[in-house]
Image (cartoon, rainbow, N blue to C red):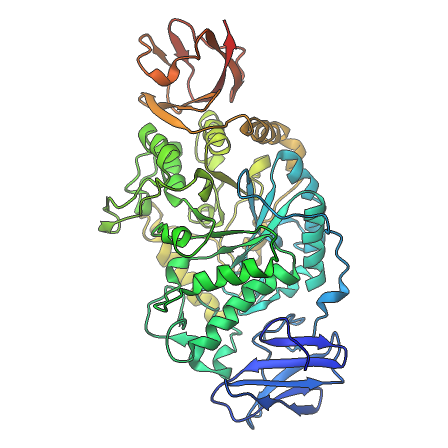
Length: 589
C-alpha cells in the first residue's frame, strides 16, 4: 500500500489520490466528488481511508458522514479555493520545483526577526507581491521572516488567529505554490521564514472538525477564545496526531525554517509527554537535520517551554512593556507594574525577563520564571508587534507616541542589545500606517467581535468610552496596509536600522550593565560601550562606575551616535547629551 507522508488529508499517488480522515463515532465516511460518493474503509482507530483513481491534482471534494445529506470540507484540506465553507482541493506538493537546494537553514545565534502580515505587507496583499520587497529587507540586515498565521479563515481579511483549516494556506493570499515561491525567494535572498501557528483554539466560523468528532475539544480547561483543544482526554490521540503532523507538514512541504507558537499558555496538557514537546520533536524530524527555529508566545513567561519542551526561544513581553513605559510614561492595565527605569532595562539585558517570580500587582500573583540561565538569544525582544500596536487607541506606531530622539535611542537599544531583536513590518522605514484590529465576519459574529474588542480595551482607563475603528470595516483593513514608497521618503530611518544591524556584529561578549543617571545607563561588551540616555543632558563629574573604564592604555572614542553629533566629552569628565544612544570603542592612547 502507498506510504503516506502525513497521517491525514488527501495525498497524491501514482494510482490516484489517497484520502484519510479521522472520524471516530461515525459508521461510514465517503468522499463526494461531483455527484459521486466514494466510500472509504474504516480503520480500527477511527480513521477512514481509501484510494480514488479518478481524483488528481485540483480535484474538488467533500466528505459525507454516515447518511447525512450535508457534506463537509476536509479538516486536513491542503487548499480551500473558495474559503473554509467551500470544497477542498487535492494539491500536488511535488509539482513545485524548488530552487533552494543550497539553503542550510537558520542559526539561532545572530537572528534578526521581521514580523509580517501578508495581507497588509503590500497593497495587493499576496505572496507574489511580497516577493518584490524581500531584497530590501535583507539589505537592512534582517535574516528571518515571521509570517502571521495563514490558516484558512472566513471573510475577505483578518489577522489569521481565527483560522479553521490549519493545513490550508489562506486562498486570499494566493495558492499553496505561491506560498512555496515566497519561501523559495526568501531563501534565495538569505532570509529564513517561520510561520505563526495557532494550536490553542480554532475559529468560530467555518470550523467543521466538530462534525467529524467532538474529541477535538474539551471543557476541562478555560480558554479566552472558545473551547480548548483536547490534548489529554478520551480521543486525544487523534487530536495530538492532527496537530503534531500539521507542524511537520509546514516544515516539510513548504521548506519553512521554524514556527512561532501562539499563546502557548492556552495549550493545556497533562499527558506524560506534553503536546508542545511532541509538536517540536515532529517539526525537527521533518526538517531532516536542517536547523529550524521554534519560538513561543507565553504570557506567564515560563521557561519550561525551553528547558523541558524543547523550544528555542520565547517572546519577552517584559522588555516591550518596560520600553513602552520608558518611551511614553503610559502605565495603565498590564503596563502598571513597569516604570521604564534604567534599572529595568539593565536588569533585562543581564538576566532576561524582568519578572522572574516577583509579585505582580496587575495580576495579583507572582509573575514569570527565572531566565538567568538562558542564552541571551533565547529571548525575543521588540518595540512593536501586531498585538501591541493594535492595543492602542488608534493602532499608532510608537514613533508617534514619543519624542524622536528617545525613539531612536530605544531602537538602538533593541538592535544592539544582547537578545534576539524583532521588528514589525514597516518599522524599518518609519511607516506611518497604523496597524488596527481587523476581522471580516458575518454580521452577527462581527458584532460580537467588535464588542469583545471594545471590552478588551476597557482595561485601559484612558480609552474607556473612546471610538475605535470597526474590525469588520474594509477601511480598517485598508488603512493598515504599508506604503513602501515611504522607504525612500524616510531614507534616514532605513539607514538608522541598516547601520545599527551592521554595528550589531561588533557587540560581542557577555553583557554587563549599570545605571549612570536618572534616565541613563551603560551596557559593557567586550570591546564596546553602549550608553543610552532617555532623559535630559547630564554630566558625570565623578566617574565612579568601573564599566566606564577604558582598557589599559586606551581611551574611548565615539563609534556611533543616534543623533547628529561629531563628538562628545568623554575625557576627565563626561557630558552625555539628551535623548541619545552612543557606542564607544577603545583606541590606543
